Image (cartoon, rainbow over all chains, first blue to last red; front, side, top):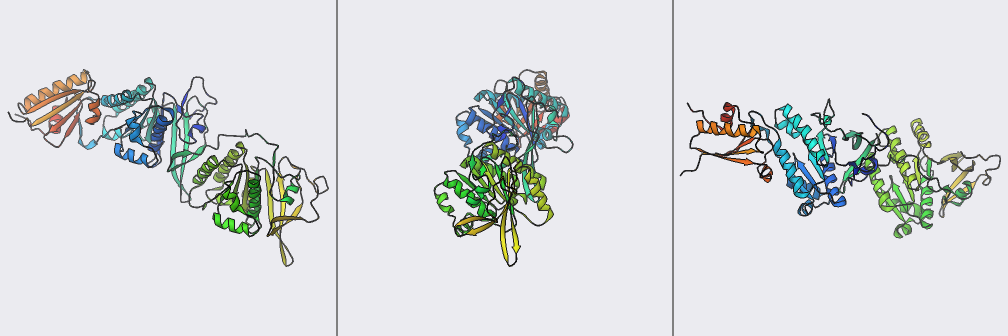
Length: 488
Length: 94
């Protein structure tokens, strides 16, 4: 598959209105050209085609024709209604037309020469009667099971794509994923402009949906697999890969929420828009530190999203109350949103898409994920890491400051994960428990903080009824001192 | 006058060689085998495009046997008389 960089001159794109898809393709599908959307049963092909038309009609005012070889008009209207779209209304407004083409192989006898001219008549009639700019054909491959003359079918398919191009129609043609070839009947031979693959596979017993742009002539596109989600609002693609390292680095600072901890970060706290990881074994106070951070941000007038994986919102609030942190007030003020989810209920992309939606919906300046190991438990490590990199990229691009807690186990595997994580985070705070005689004390250490002269000392963490307090073993030693260490 | 036993509709799209052949073939087959028992209506979808959707036509030419029931469809230029007769469930005369 050849892939060109940059956009060829003259290539215009038709926005699909599908969340995230237009971002990964730099604007949508090639305008006036057919795009092939391939997938197995239940992969979301029909929905993709449908949303392309519905959004095209609603958001871009472009009338669309849906040629269905499988579902009846009534079924389609019903299915789309469940996503909140009223097709009937669009049909009334002449923005939409469905033609359900029924061909039952059993009752058709072939004798002598024929072609599929009536298909063109129907398509042309539908296009002309509403002035359609978009067409979806779902799925044209049905003709292969209904007619026996392969030669005729192939030449008619070629004619169909030419027909659509000549009329300047932006089209989505769906195709069944094949075993040997890309599609069962080699449709990819006829569509040379754009090919999109939808995939629905099971990883670790969880169904995961992925979208990949296999080909997009004349346009740069990410070759990654993008997770996508089909929910009650339709199709969303998680676009967070395309961003890259273009985020503006900010000089602005944001308090850690803990006086003693601010002191360790040049007296002022983290850089705004950076990524902070707080790691430690169970019971070291990770969540408390995260809550202090969140609370302070709220009090400073920032909106905070707290994404919890282990506890319910009420549990978190209760626990934090016990150390004197009142999260409820912030929730009441609309500054704090606590969202709790079980990590294992959904596939990773569902979490990421949900997360993405929460961020675009709530628009927080600060995000806390507690713990990120809730996510790393799903899927294989490389996959998770890739996803997290995308997520962090996305947050950075938005200038969102994010804090992740990470449960460190004693086992080597988990340590490796944390090391992997280290390359993508800016600040790493490590918590540990030290047995000193009969007493167990919590210790805090900054492992790194990019662009900062942070303290290199280990301090003691106290969880008091007044929040988290840090007690310097000696006192906080300024970084210029002998223990100090410059950040990278 | 009694109702014709065979009510046939032939869908074409303009005067193409295939359409012309189909019309000729159908007329000949009916005259030879169904004399006085049939009607043929030729429907040109170029003139009435909306009928393609209503009558679920995809291939051209398509011959539809409306009566007797059940509905039967034969596609192609009807050049093979044997197949047409089988498709229409007509016993060959002679």
